Each structure stands twice: as structure tokens, then as C-alpha cells.
View (cartoon, rainbow, N blue to C red):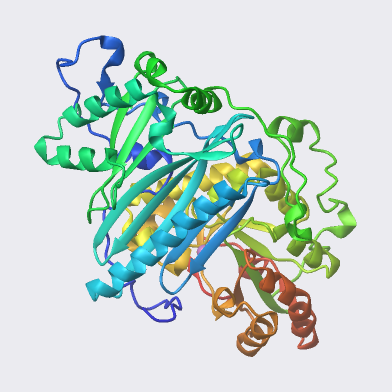
Length: 517
Ligand code: NI
């Protein structure tokens, strides 16, 4: 749909859909059957598959990324095509990281093909992740994909398991003994979720050695139960899920499956792996949460939080000064710490619109940004096109992110920026209800597209004027490299850099701002 510049006059042309929340466990729950079979046709109550998985106990374990020190992100985004894919980079485990990248790559090429074949130019692809098992013996990563072609949204989920002892990827059947797998197959094939005959071919297909478009994922809940999700990739479908009780599952698991289950039920923090990494990546290493809490006062990798190094030493009156606000979206990520250092060196204030998913992955880094005096805004939890979600789903995306920022920094944000700048009346209303002011932009550097520091500088300088809000993304190293020069050139032209709150002054929740008037 061409270059998306937020237009304050035109309503968003995108259709409002009751789309899915691409929120890890939430997708599994959203796609769950709601019917409980009155009678267990297969005998032992311990082995009954429950289809009424509405409690968090039956959701796959959702673990903090801080259990994996040195974890960073691989983010692919295309702001004009509504594409955002994030996968974790697990240090020292290149095969696992490679599989996750391959999933993202295949989702992306499949989506582009389907979009082209549909003749529809409106779509969205969103891929998010969470850790579902971490121990010295196994690592499990859940990947949740939501893709829309035209008005049809399809959800899917995959779980990639890595055996830390044998150094190999585990396919779903590797988690079970031969007997356990055949028991599981029987359970799924009879379709206890009362999905009817229509689901049987789907289950058969998922269990076959060549599943094609059908995906089977196995994750474990904190209570030791297993969550088996089958994603059909049929347009408009959501993962079909069966929850298996802990007692049944225990007898079915192979040694590798038991290790995977233990990694979900009793997760362990991994030791820091010494791998050659880029300077900016190294600085983002996140210590285990427990240690981080103790060491909150002094973290060696963090830029110092000394008063004199704070980004904004004194208040600026933008009625007098020629103010411009630099804003950085989609982080915090591998290059954020480097950007913070560069901004601090230049004494340049800025505003970071962060994704809740990344804040939860990097709480220490988020705290570092806040302590250095930068403003933090809300950029949704998993970067979906909010106009495709219901009002309550939008509220959930925003409130979950504000809570993550509050947890990490002690302060709840007052500003939000909708992903892709996509908004409509429902998004505005949801923002107002959770107390957030909408901040868009009037200068789009297209930094995600150019990936060239000089071009980013040139574009920002060409379009900036008094009161401008400049859109940048700190997930790209080229953007971070562009910043010091951009700051110097803006100042040469008489601009004063400020945070968005300083630029706009006091604002009303739910109001929208593209620049300062
Ligand atoms: Ni974004």
C-alpha cells in the first residue's frame, strides 16, 4: 500500500477485523476448543485430554528471556508492507537460531507468494516468539505467526526444541517414546476436542512424516501437562489445541522429552557463552533476572546513570526554541545500548517507542535507557496492525506493554505509537482508555529500507522543521551510526533536540500528534 505516512485527515482504510493476538501462549488459548467432552471415551481420567483450556495453568510455559544470557534479536521488518518478524538469537546455539531464522524466512516467502497470488495488496505478517523451556539439557522456543491476506487472518504456532546434551534439534516425535507417540497419535486422531470428522484429516496430516502445510507443536505447561497445537495454515484458521494432563504425559515421554518438560516446569538459567559478538550486541547481554535484581545499582555493561550524563540537562521552552524530537521504534534490541551511548555523548535527548515483548526480553536494557534520562513510549506488545484487532485486544496489547515498561523502569509510559502508524477510531479509543497519547510522526526517514547511515541523515535533514517528530528505528545498526552526524547537523541548523513530551507539552490521552503545532 505504498509509503505509509500517517494522514491526520483520512481515516485508516484498513478493515477492522476480529483478528488474533499474536501473543505466544495467548494464541494457543485463543484457538482452543471451548467444549469439554462429557465422557472420556478412552478410559483413565489421568489421561484425559482437556479441551477447556482457559486457565493459565494449561498454557505453555512462558519464560523470561533473561534465562539466556547474551540472547539478542533478529528482526525483519517492512514498514510499508506491514511485516514484522522477530526471532531470538541464542548464543552458542547456531543450529537452533538457524532453524528459527528458517521459520521466519519460510513464513515470509509463503506470505509474499500468497499475497501476490491473492491479488490483494493489503496484508500483514507478524511473527513473535517466547522461550518455553530453558535448562542445561533443553531449550524450547515457541514461535507464533499471524498472517493476514486481505481480510482473512490465519494463525499458527511452532515450538522448536534443542537438545543441549546431544546437540540436535528435536522433532515432535523425538519427545516421545514409540509407545507414547502412538498413544498421542490415537488421542489426537479421535479428536477429543469434539471438532468432528473435519479435523481428523488435519490430525493425520500433522502426524505424518511430511506434514506439508500442517504444523504440529508440543510445549509443556508449568504443571507438567503438555499442550499439543496443530496449525493447519488453512486461510482463516487458528491453531487447534489439545491439553494433556501431566500424569498421562509423563509416561509417554522419551528421555529427551522429559528433559524438555523439566526445562519448562523447572527452568534453569544458562551460563554466559563466550562467543565473538559485535560490540553493540555484547553490551546488551542481560544477566539472569535474580542476579540483575541484586546488582541493580551498578551494572558494568550499562552506560552510567550519573546525573551529568543524563540526556536532558535542563528544561527547554519549545515556544522559543526550534525543537525537534528524534524517536526510535521497535526496540530495545541489539543496537540500543550503542545508541544510548552515542546519544549520551552528544547530550541529545530522544524518545524510544518500545515493544513490550522486547522490554520483557531485555528489562535491564530498558532500565538503562530510562535511567539515562530518555523517554520511553509504548509501541504495542508484539507489533501487530492494531486496526485488525478488536478494541479489547488493542487494549491488551497496550496495557501489557505499559505494565512491562513499569516493571522494568518503575514508570508507566504516557505515550504510544501504533505499529506502522496504523490507527482508526477503535485504536484511538483503546489508547484513551489505557491513558496513552498517540504519537505519530511527520518525518519518515525510511531507515528500515535504506539501511544506509548517509541516506538516513540526508532524508531526516531534508524533511525536518520546527516541531517535527522524526521516525527512526534502533533495531538497525545503520540508523545508530547515522545518529551522531544527524544530531550535529540538526544543531547546526539551529534545532534543539527534545523528548516528545517536551515537544508536545501536556497532552490528553487518546489525542493524536504528528508534530508540534
Ligand atoms: Ni514499529
